[in-house]
Image 1 (tube, rainbow, N blue to C red):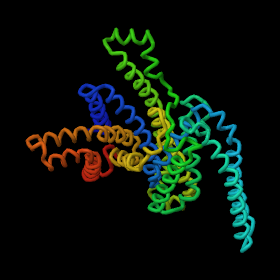
Image 2 (image 1 turned 120 degrees about the horizontal axis):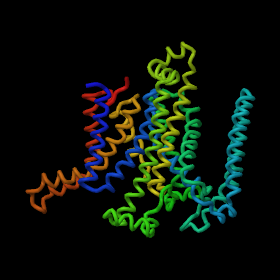
Image 3 (image 1 turned 30 degrees about the vertical axis):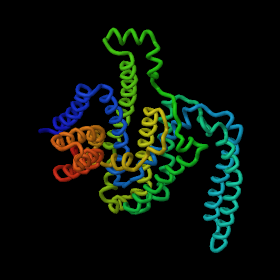
Length: 433
């Protein structure tokens, strides 16, 4: 069987699983799996750029996805005028003071020598810290006191939400550049620990800085690039068209909105996939794989390994940021409490490994397949446990235990799938050529 036929068959199987979900369960469920599969495929492409192209072991995916979600709030939500009047300018000035303090400390580190350098840097950092806190804390307190039940934050810029997807990529790329300048010199296992820790720091900031995005109070009612269901249901034209097709207007409005998201997400995925494929087959892509396979040999040929690692780290993180912005737009709210390494790091890594590290098509396949299993395994596991315990007494402790254990079928299935792929196809379902 040729590679083209095999790859087409694998994608056809995944498509059949999604279509089967629509036929057997509901088309709403099928479109939900499709949309989340599209976003997961984009996340997997971002990780594949870093790991498959350059061998960078980044387990801080969650942080860059969360930054993409934050970008939606900062870009598309309307500004809160009262909050800006209460302390918005002072917060911006305080942040500039903090950045300026760090810049001066770096400048002194390069200009001075000996004991004087350490004393001067220490004095600047201490003075800058107290000045920063003296400006920042009162301003934040004033902002968070403005209608905390509904806002309590500065809001955003009120720009179109599609523009926020680009900003999400840029925000994640900027954070990746800062992280990469300090962490990319570490060995792979230390790099993994550093990126995971930095992702937790990003999440801690999102949860605790209410002035930025309401923290754990969440930001709801985010703008959408597609119509809202209630607006479609109130449209006489839409209702008449739905009824002419024999559809309930409520169901039809939900399907219409999800199809709209599917079209937008597919366009983004295709653009990123085409660009990733062009990069993979370019001289730059061949250079990145050469660095991945043997850094010493690449350096001997005059390649700046650290600089190239920084490039690919920023690009991969930007893709994850775009996916995070798309996910927050689909949810319609930013909920920092839902970001966890299991969903936004471990699962994405399973997608890349199962699909095929170093192969962009494999990452896309892994994104769809693993997300489908993640969604469907729990209800199927519950049905399986109910079938197994069918003949047991209703008050049986074993029956109750087995049925309660169905909630853990997701983790068990992910582990089994990963082990089977590593055993029978260690380079993934669509391996790198």
